[in-house]
Image (cartoon, rainbow over all chains, first blue to last red; front, side, top):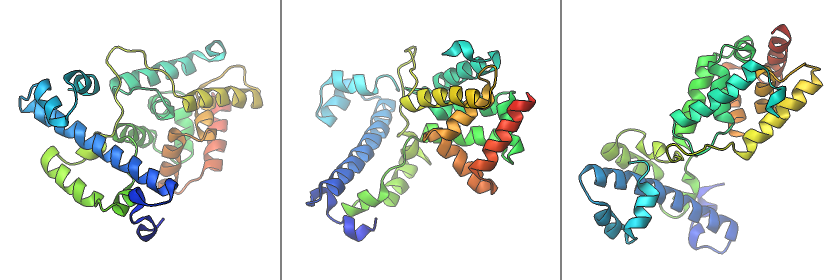
Length: 69
Length: 184
């Protein structure tokens, strides 16, 4: 698959390519979230502060990240 | 189905579970099984050696594959204007080299039962079939390894990559492992 045919995929009209791009973005976002949350906690942020920054509940962020930090 | 396993093969399955616990994996897949087989003392490790592979290298590759998780889809990201190399450069800088790959590993909760993935179950079934095909008395570690080789699975892909780099191929590996099994 060339880059050219994929251009605009997430917003494009082919569901296969569009969904693939969405999945790739979600995967990347999840990893960045993991790294950022770990770092914030390491810097002394509370779960509430992390949750507020992510726009989710404290319970949600603790459930998702509490086990690895 | 474990009653037809040899003591040594049962040990390999227990070792795979310990590998998963050690790496805090959420599931046990064929890569964990491959680590256990390659790091074990059984005929499966001898078979890998006879096929021109270094069992320690195979185990190391499998461990790396587990801790890195699935690869990110760089092409799909480029298509929506995200330069993965640039993202990686920045995360390496802030979080340490390889942080983005490590963040992709799936972690389980401590102390929770770690289940086998469907492809690992499939590999165990294929091991049984291999043992029957080879008219063996029980399922030993060589049959488990042949099961991993036959299943379309992450562990098999680690083996393929190792074989590719060592200049070998799957048919030769199968032959070497079968021979190691008969010699055991």
